[in-house]
Length: 236
Image (tube, rainbow, N blue to C red; front, side, top):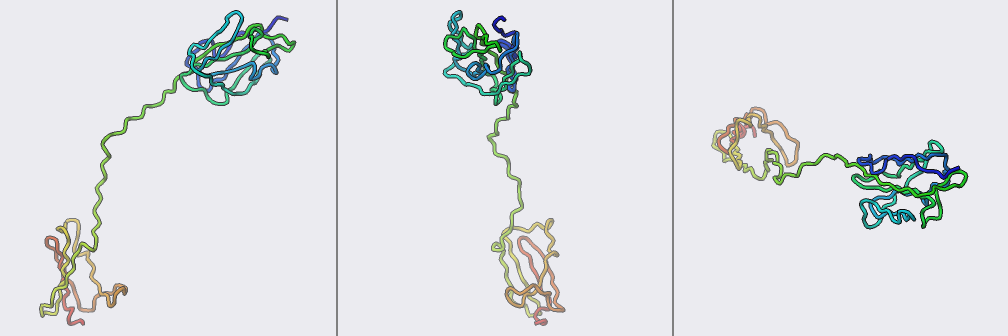
């Protein structure tokens, strides 16, 4: 039986635009011994100087050598005895050149080799590269230097800003209360007839209706509201 050789691979040599979740597949010309394919005889590495020493090639380097190597971990499965699948434990990075190495007997630094069930190892190590594609992520718009406008909110009127004054008796039995606001009253948005006048016998008592016979006359002018309590003095 002849030494095993690789017939084809996925991704292929120098393939570009490879999907980030892609598996690495190797098709051999004969059944292989799965126990000989381990982390010692197979590697998938990211950017770096992933090299193979070979008597014929001497030194074969990755097309994009960088300092250090990124070893990709994963699992090996065999859909058939001549078909190896390596599934990375995490997606590959976009726009990166990766190198696959499967060790044969020509490697002068290795002590284990990929072989068939009869113990015949691959005569020559195999190494090839492929490049992942880019992620077409949408470009977010740059933040505007102008802060968004704050929606207008009707200001809440503080009771402390309203001046309430009880005018002296005019001798007619009526009393007048004048409420002075800090700004002119918008009569288009405020109906003075909606004001409710009630009596409070003692501080903090519940609001009670005005005594029988007492009526109110409410008028508005500028920033004041005038409330006339008619017949209040006769009602006690």
